[in-house]
Length: 354
Image 1 (tube, rainbow, N blue to C red):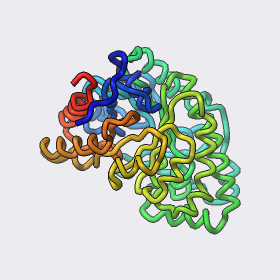
Image 2: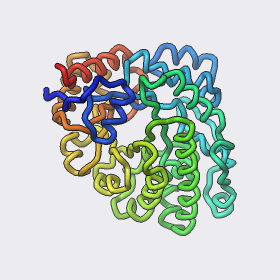
Image 3: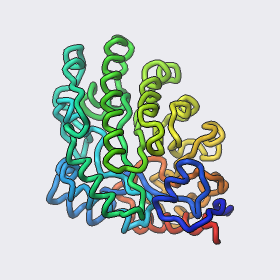
Image 4: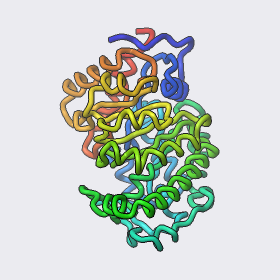
């Protein structure tokens, strides 16, 4: 295995992650996992017996506790904020719940002009003050040893929940509004874009050191529709936080959109497992890359996990700018010990001193 290019000094998890996100030399490849603070951790499951998801996200001490769990449990290089992409809806005046077996559920979906124009745009600190207090607590607790990663949902993905009212497989209502009422669609996207820029800027002001924009369902759009109905808004969001902290752009099932997404203005692209990492990197150009182990691999015996992890590292080839991650979130049945071993393996195989 080719080691990472030599770094002049040994790095903390924070400096390692932030350097890789900007394609700078590191002492070893940084690692974190989407959904790392969640159901695969016994301590988290115990906490959930007492508190629901939204209570944890809206209680700074609990949010801090859960965010820090994988730092100690796995030794990851970034602590991703325990939150949900739906949190900005509190300030927008949209009631919602999170059903653990379903996902976000909107009691009154946004499907007409009146509903779109009723959406409020308020200061992010007014909408979710507890979240920003949690960020400040997390920064103090970590004291620079691990990067603090914030995030938001991209306008298309958040809009799909607003319009459908719950997770969907066909996105029929969302795409019907997009195609049939394009002016209303763009009005909704304008609102969500402004809310998202404010939300991410407030996270940065509170102390996050990098942000990821989740466009989890963008793969349902064809390339032409993506460029018309989604890309301009994502580009504005990255422009709105440019020069503050490193930014990561994430989507699933979006190999056909890769070049367009890479041009939206992020510092790094996060790719899923459907495309080999080296092929994806050759297509995104001069950006860092994050990924891309299939999450289901982590349910297999360790020799299988090890083989696939080493393959991803081989595809990265020791080039500056690789952040090791899964191609999507950690599955609930993933053994915590497996994730710790993946972190140890990646660090060991890519150490500049090995």
